[in-house]
Every structure is written in C-alpha cells, then in structure tokens.
Amino acid sequence: MITIAISKGRMQDDATTLLAEAGVSLSPAALASRKLAIEDESGEYRFIFVKPADVPVYVEHGIADCGIVGRDVLLETEADVLLPLDLGIARCQIVVAAMDPKVITRAFGMLRVATKYSRIASAHFGQRGIPVEIIPLSGSVELAPALGLSDAIVDLVETGRTLKENGLKIVEVITESTGRLVVNRASYQLKANEISRLTQSLSRVIEGANVA
Amino acid sequence: MLLSKLPPGMRYYLGAEARLRRSVEDTAMSVFQGWSYEEILTPSVDYYALFEQGMGTSEAQSSFRFTDNDGQLLSLRPDVTSSVARVAATLLAERERPLRLCYAASVFRQQQQSHAEWRRENTQLGCELIGASGNSADLEVLLLAAEILQRIGLGEKFCITINDVGIFNGLLNQLKPTAAARETLRSLIDTRDIAQLQCFLDGQSIAASTKDALARLARFTGKRDVLESAREIIDSPVSIAAIDKLSRLWQVIESLGMENYFEVDLADVSGLDYYTGLSFKVFVRGVGYRVGRGGRYDDLTANFGNAESAVGFVLSLDSLVEVLGRDVSTNGTSEPKIYSIETSELSGSFSEAVERRANNEQIRIEPKQ
Image 1: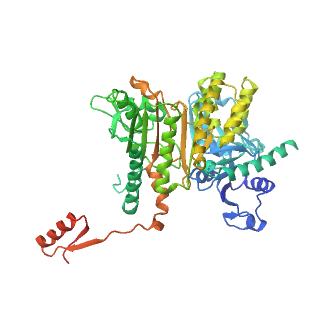
Image 2: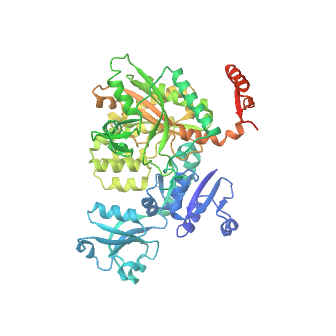
Image 3: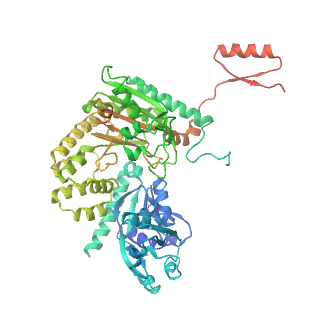
C-alpha cells in the first residue's frame, strides 16, 4: 500500500480531482467524512490530509511514501525529498511586493520584509546582497506595509487582487510555484513499481490536459 | 541549565535494544572478518583539517569543533574514512596491498542531511578496501554489505542502489558548465525534479542530444534495462565507459541471482565530489532515509601523499537497530537461567557466586531481606 500525504486547503480539491482522473478515486462518502486518514476504493492507496507545511515532514520520515504539496512549501522547508512530477495545479507566484517598488533599492540601510516565507525571502535578498530584517508572520501579510510594520512583503500571489486591494505592487517575481508530487527517497527505491505506476498514470492525465 | 535535559540528537540505549545493538555489531564485524577485513580503531578526536581534506569542506562543516592548546582546530570525528585513508598512506604505506580494514565506531555531526535523521551521534559499521581497483573490488564490498544485511535479518527488506559517477561527469565534461550551473544540474537530477530541470536546460545553449540525455538521466532508475537505454542515448566516451563497467558489474549480480537486492539508479548524483566511480546507497523498508552509503574514492588517499584506489561503505548501526527493534518483541530471545544468591552470610554467598561464575553461569546478588 502507498500512503499519500495531501495538503489541506487550496490544493486539496485539485489534487483529489487529478488523482481521480488518474484512476485513484476516493468515495464521496470518505471525502465528506472528517477522517484524516482514508483509503481509496481499490485499497491500494491510503490518503492522509495534513497542513501544507507538514506534508514534507511525513514524506521525509517515510511515514507517507508520496505527497502532494506546493513548491513554495518545499522551498521554505528545504525538504529533502524527490520531486518527480509537476502536477501543474494551484499555480501561483512567490513575489516581492511593496507599496512603492523603489523602496527595495532606496532602503539602503535595512529593508524590513514581512513574510510567511522567511527562508525564501532571506535567500532571495541574500543573493542580491540586500540586507533585510525578516519579520515572520503567519497570515494577512499584505497588511504589514500599510500599517508600517514592514517596507515590503514576500508572499504567494494567485490573481494579485489581494495585493491591489491593499495598495501593493509586485516588485519582482522570485519564482513560480505549482503543486508537486513528492516522493520519499527510500520509498522511491523500495516501492519502485508502485510509485512508477502512480507517476505514470498521473503524468498521462497532465499531458492530456496540456494537449487539450 | 536544566540538568535533566539531553542535547538534541543524543540518546541512551538500554536493555533489549542495547543487546540487539551489540549483536548486530558483532554480526557485522564477524562478516567483515569472514572476508578478511582487519579491525582498526581510530582516534575520536582529530584535526579538523583532516576531515576538511577527507570529506570536503561542506560535509566537514557539520562536525563539532573546538580548539587545541596551541590554537589548532580539532573536531570530534564526523567520519572514520578520512582517518583510515591517512593511516593507509602513512603508517601502513609499506604494507602489502590490498589493505582490508573495518570498524565499528561512533561519529558525530552537528547537522544531519535530512530532517528525518535526528541523531547527532551515529555508530558506523564500515570497511575500506585500499589498493584494489576494478569490478572485483567493487563487487567484493557490495556483496559484503548485502551479506551483513541478510545476516542481521533484513534479507527481505533492503535494497542497494548502484551508480557510477562517471556517467554524469562524462556528460558534464562535454558541457563545461560553471560551478554554480554544475551544482544546479546535480541537485535537480538528484531530486528527480524533471520539471525544473527542463526549464534549466531550455535556458542553456547545449546540444539537444546532451539536453535529452541529462533530462532522461533523472528517470533512469531500475534494473538492467536502464543501463541498456542509457547506453543508447548517451554519446560521451567517459559516460559510456562508466555504463559499460556498471553493466559488467550488473551481469555478475544477475549471475549470482542477487538482482532483487540491487537497483541501478543513474540519478543518484549526491556524492559527486567524493566518489570517483561506483557509488551506492542502502535503503531498508521502514526507514525513510538511507541507512548506508559507499563507493569508490580513488582520489582520497592522494590528499595524504599516496594516491591509490579505494572502495568502501558505511552502514548506520542506529538505523539498523531501529528497524530490527520493531520486531524484537516477536523474536522472543530466550532468557538465560539466572541464579539468585542472597547475601545472608557473606563468605558463603560469595563463594557460591565465584563458583557459579567459574562455570560461566549468570548470577544475581540479592541484598539480605
């Protein structure tokens, strides 16, 4: 049996739809239940639904063989997992945004950056040689510049509406993020056949979607 | 300071687990001995410079460091191989080759590579075969590792993945990438991140055939068919030589009927700066990260003034015991008979104790009620 950890929230519906198209379907009853661990109809797969940041934890420890999680989470947690497949779901960008884009270069002393992505932000500004004070927040990051908590933010952007409504403009795109299939290093070898069957049927669905 | 607290990554072993640990270690050491490997004990503390040379700077930096009286940087050993390579090139330089050395020793690292590997003290079961080259030496250590895993009762649970770093290096030699590009390529292939790899390759001006080969490398995991496919699409002479060498190794593994224990993994490019030929990793069902690794490092002893071929591996005793320990209750090791001796009258009681001990019986001294 293969255990797959799935990010709760934004990713969950897209992920289960994609899996169903790949022939791994969860009964509506199971999905509707509040159970956090359920099996698919064939009994070949077990699903666990956990917070996005916990997906790499379960996979790294090998408790889950695979996971479906955004690239943003993987970069932020520096997870040591294999990423054989880009599922193309939940597409978004990790961006630097500010009320005045010039602030990045103008704040010569120390740029204050509010973010849920401390590691990504500090790596990004580090690479560019810009000294930053990272202000870790766990939500509503867009508020920070308006209230004077920070000069800029690093955050995930899907449509850009929230940014606009809070008077923020995108300064630069750090990287793209999409939902990824991640695999535990040991499972990749020890359950090679099962894993490759799963990745193959998923990639057929994705390629089909790209053609259409 | 809370005295009851242990530093992170440290732990005690006791009772059944400690016994299991010792028995796994004994089994491994007897297998090493069975292949004529001689046990070597190396210093627990050594100069940091040794490990920096022996392991490469990035790996050595994970060690616990402190200074000697004269200001020299010392380190708790983060590996044993560096020290063995030095002794082979110095004290044992005149000894007949090949040298076969083995050890069971604890190593210390401040940071582990994976979040799942929480331990900072690990006992390595390892061996080095120095002064022997070619497939014969490579096979010897591979089969030795497999025998240990079988004998400790993991025969149905383990898998050894093999690769030759020459395959990736050969492809890269054609590209002559910058150090940063090389590292990016290496890490994308190592994590099988095909989507990101395609993006990266699309932005590089390199031959389409090399692009294709690099992209496919990330998927080349399997048995003999992987080597055959790789042979067809790769045109670097260095890579082809490495593939052919690995194929000959695989043929022997097949002829021994051991192909179920092994897997070819051409995308395993994690130890590139260390290994010079064969590289392999050991995985066991029930552990999410590798429990051992090894390979050929012909350049290592050159650091100490005497270049010669060398191949070896380490297994993590702690990880092995963790897997085996989960089944230990079902194994039900038979308890030996214990003689309780009450210390009512000291000389009488202890003469019985000494007598029973002379017969190698297990006794337990009970205090007077």
